[in-house]
Each structure stands twice: as C-alpha cells, then as structure tokens.
Length: 197
Length: 134
Image (tube, rainbow over all chains, first blue to last red; front, side):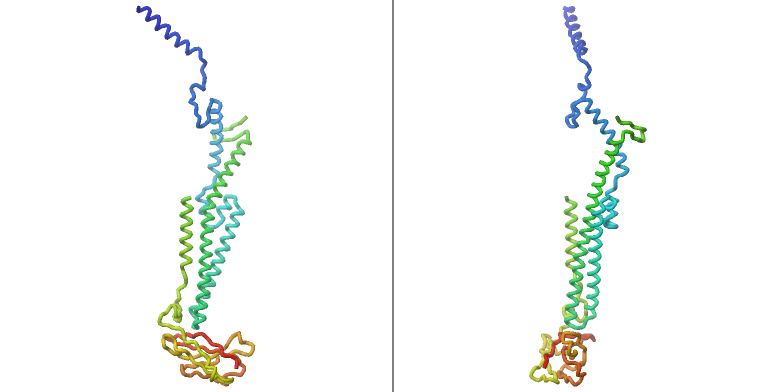
C-alpha cells in the first residue's frame, strides 16, 4: 500500500515537472495586459519606453525654453501688448496696444475737456452759462468715464489673452522642438551622444 | 470659466461706478447746488411804452417774491444781431426800468436786457431778453 502511494506521488510530480518543460518561456505571459496604454505585447511596451525617453529629452529642452504665463501677464499689465510681442503674436499685440493707446488718449482728451468746461462753470455768473457749462462738463466727464471703462476692459482682456497667447507659444514651441529632435539623427545630451537609426 | 465670470462682474462694477459718478455743482451761484440762490427774474419788454429811442421793461415777481437787484443792458452793431453784444449800461436799482438809446453810441442798433441778483457779494445774472426791432 505504501509503495502504491509512493508510485502515485512520484507519477504526479513527474507530470508536473514535465508539463512545465514542454512550454517555452514567453515574455507576454508574464506581462499584464494593459489595455489603458495599449501595451498588448513587449514590442509596444518597448516602443512606448523609447517614445517616453525621446519625449523626456524634448521636454527638458522645452522646460528651459518655454515662457512663463505669469511673466507675460506682468508684461501686459505694465505695457499693453508686451506679453503678446514676447509670445510672437505681433499683430494682436499691435492691435491691442493701438486700441489701448487710442482709448486712453481719448479718455484723457475728454477728461481735459470736461475740466476746462468745469472751470468755466465754476467761474460763470450767468444762469444760462452756468447750466450750459455744467452740462458740457458733465457730458465730457461721462464720455471720459465710458472710455476709461472700455480701456479697463481692453486692458483686462489683453492680460487674459496673454495667457492664451503664451499657451499657444509654448504648444508651438513643443512641436518645433519635437520636429527638430526627430529630424536630427545625432543628438548631444547631458548623458552623451545619442544616435538614432 | 469661473474666473471669466468674476472678471466680467468686476468690469461691470467698475463701469457702473464710473458712469454713476458726475461732477458736483459747486458754483456758489448755481441755484441747483445752492438752495439759498435763485435765478434772477426774466426781463419782459413793455411793448406799449417802448419807442424807437426808449426801451421800457418790467419783470415778473419770482417764486421767491423778489425783484431783481439791477439790470444789464447789452448792445450790438448793425451786422451783429446774432453775434457778440457789449454790456453798454447797468441799472443798479430794481425800479429803474427805462433806457434811452441816446445814452450810448448810435452804432449800437440791437439791444438785449437781463436782470441780476446779488448773493453774498457775488452777482448772478439771469436770462437775457432780446429787444425786438422798432
């Protein structure tokens, strides 16, 4: 009986060892199928790693050359259009700069006119002059106020649009750097020389 | 999106603040800005007693029940009916309501009249009235 049990045990283990030997080792069997990233086999995984390394090289360069949103916004706050000029959007920068100069200049013109009428109003001693100068002064003053409001709106829009312009600049910069990198077979990096085939 | 909404609310607030602002009426002779000041009465030409050489006028009593403190008489040359008028005479009595054209140069052909009141030493002049051609 004991011999029988021993024989059965031996045969069972023998089959198990043999069963493992008949299959060849396959990388795909030990890889978890990752549907999210589309890694269906080792090749796609390795391709992805290669792409990732290339992207990281371009990313490092992009990090050094990209523009800061905050800095460009500050530029636009100080001098309207400056942020756009930095982000290579010259036409838009010129239009916004011109518009703001026009609005600010017009606002100042009407404010100055209102102060002139207001001075005459304060010095007037004839009832018709008093009323007319006050109406003229107030009209110019309100026109100036409207223009100042429009200027503030344009100023705010310029700052907001600077964010978009910087975003666009950085996006284009990425594509440019990536295209440059892909078009060069030999790349000099901090780690050494990389040759792509 | 939220930032954009906050930004535009801020802009509208600034806009309303600026629009609602207006200049103060701080002329001491402005009746609207000073309740103690009232517009001088409008001079009316007494067409019955006015002749080619003499102008006679009167004023209606104002709401404040006050006559004018005096009158200004303006004259203009022949071709200057719609142009500039020179102040040619001043009447300092409310009852002195007659003007003889011989008192001034005969070059003055057209005339206007206005009344004035004095408030705290400052003179406020009322609306002027054109004397019709005789």
